[in-house]
Length: 284
Length: 321
Ligand SMILES: [Zn+2]
Image (cartoon, rainbow over all chains, first blue to last red; front, side):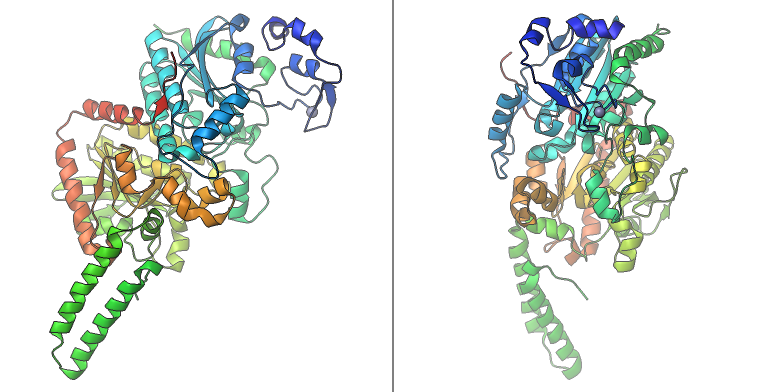
């Protein structure tokens, strides 16, 4: 029952706030249509009690779920997107950034924080899909790069929680080069013999899949997450056929050899603790 | 039959006049050398005028010009045929969209790798339009490792509309194959020169694009998405490809200004397709020049420089501390 206790004081909903939740706040599962009170849904870590559908959650929820007693130190909090290309489509990019920051209360699509997970030191970089589809621009690349530097300096493992539609088009080639940048930084982490855990969640596609998300010492995913390089719509258009059931889902990737295992949210923390202990026990 | 882009119409007219003059000379034995000389000058001026003022979108068009030379043409010319093509990823199959092999250039062995487009309808199919599958990226990696073993520098030619978005590509891990190359190329111990000779589309290009020197030919593009797809996603219409091409800052000049590439290789006046032999020679000279600088460096130093270069890419706002 370890995880259950954690939810009670760690995750998300302090008891006080809970009481104030107005009645009639319900969660309807998009997969099986089961309706449960929102509070119960949150207590179950945003996983459908009926069908095990894992609702998308953000960095804050993962940090609270993972770090012991919900305690962590976030680094490089203030980094935000510049607009080096003065990109403009139907909207100015800098205005789009500002509006998204106000709406989401986030600075960009990734947050990096360290603490202990089941007693093991770990840096976690968690992506927020709310922020322009979790897209990777210079801020995402730079935060990951600095987190890796921090890991090397302070000898701790690095865990990436990917949740992204891929590149941030408004940063064009800068965005593309973040794939190169993050991969280059990962070679330094590897050189330092520090563990890199890549946790893929729904959805992980495009340039993120084609860089750091697939480069873990261990790759593992939440159940039924969409994971791929090309998006399903593009593939369908290219081959002119319907895609098979379960295509590009976690279970499909596990079967084809690209994941080490699939882990349910309720087991995530203990699993990571176990992995880190097993990897680190023989280290000199 | 040469092909012409819509903004090359005036070039086409002059070329035709020139051909007519030569034909006339053959038939009637009339001396038309004055006329041809004038026409040749006119052709050169016209080409210069047009090609010095290409828009971003026009450069994208030139990069896809059907007469533009492709990877194997460069390799065959640069090595004068002293080249052995190598096949297969030792795992699934031989990807025809990704070619590679060892060749000799000016007394120096080089491992050449690149996407290959087809020269006609049949070959375009055969080459899958230059869109590699995971086995293509893994073949590329195999050849790079082979090069590393024998201390042979690597030269990649990039020319792809993207990695292939297919069902089997996903089954066999397109994302993983590209990602692996990014990491492996970062630490490869031999010099790597990457040259965009046509289209540099997104992760499919980057998958063989990590080098000590990344160079773009004058009339090529390199970005995270094609202008057409960018238009369809951000403008929700296919009609804004010109604006998208401008906004993406995808030309060689823009990429150099933004410090995302290391240099530009000039093309013959009128583009590589107007004089392929000259294009091969310009590329060859550049390769030799860069190798002369890269080979004497210590391997560790090259790798450290490579890591530093890519780590510095990106622009952020520090915000308040
Ligand atoms: Zn459900």
